[in-house]
Amino acid sequence: MKNIVVISQDRNPTGINVGANILYNGINPNENGYRVHCLYHQRGKDYILVDSEGFEKTVPDTDQAVSLVREVVKGEDAIIQSHMYQPFANKFTDAAERHYMTELRRGGRDPLVYSNQYLYVWAALKDPRNNKIKGLAKLLNKVNEKKLAERYKKQAIARYIERWMDMSDRVVYVSNHARRVYSDLYPQYANKSLVIGLGTDFINYRDDYEVEKKARELKRKYGDRANILYAGRITKPKGVGDLIKAFKILNRKYDGFRLVVVGTGDNSIEVDRKSYKLIRNGSIIFPGEIEDRKEMAAWYKNSFVALMPTYHETFSRFAIEAMSMGTPVIISNVDGPKELFVERDIAIGVEPGNYRGIAKAIEHVLINPRETLERSKRALTAVKERFSQESHVKSFMALYDELL
Image (tube, rainbow, N blue to C red; front, side):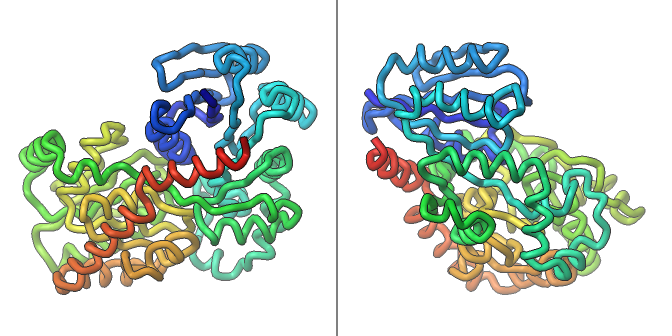
């Protein structure tokens, strides 16, 4: 039996960890011949190792984490796959990183694959997570990619990611756009790169009885309105403020709509008096973080449209989950989504920051049901053929077989 050791940040089903969790949940040892172990580095502190056979153990430092992995793998061949954009070792030095990776790889014998899903532009804009940037859309239009690259390379995170690429045998990106950006930034690693898009198993929930039941429960709890759904980080760069503005325009013209904003945020979204009124009367709701996948599938099933008005994005798991459930998707015409969804006409593209354009796109879905249905059918076919969990795992299996 061969082994895959997936290294990732925090035991979390969202964000960067999506790719790690797809592999963990999608690889069947009896079918694929690989056991999967996930080593989570919890906020740069302790480490949790879990595997597909039910094993779980927590250790406090890097030395013990490496020893634990070697003990569990039992000397068999292994692929080490990192999804990290932070250091692996608790000691933040280049020497420590390289030492522990060499130890983990049995002196470098085991191949290292790096899945780079990090979007460099947010690091380039200094501190995007606290969203102190004013006029984000105007700023991004003024700052060209060369300047963004210069800013990015000054950030600590750039050094971490470059080190991972340098140590790796292969670097995997989720879109051609991401590969192009990083190949321009680091041409010395371009020959290691390949593209494997994310996948989802949400298609299995389309006719699931429990999902249907949860969908009915949500309607009883919140009422039967046409939901406009967003799920992700509730931050300014994700365009949530623009979505709220677009909804206010729509709300003045039509009755019966509701904006559902799923996730958690950083209190950076500016909400005016009119928006507060819409929140109080239930026209805008915030259900919080939803970790129950079937509950999330129920929200997709109950939604009139799924909308992601982000300013930058490498892929968008949200989009392919919505498509799996037959929900029409509106998404920003940028980066990975432009290449993967908008140009293939399986989602409607909008310009980030243009809340009036977002409102018009929602209205377009409303008044063009036949066109929307045909687009949703194409999207479902694309998920089955390109963005399924099975296709994602199959692509990685081919890579692993090549490296071992």
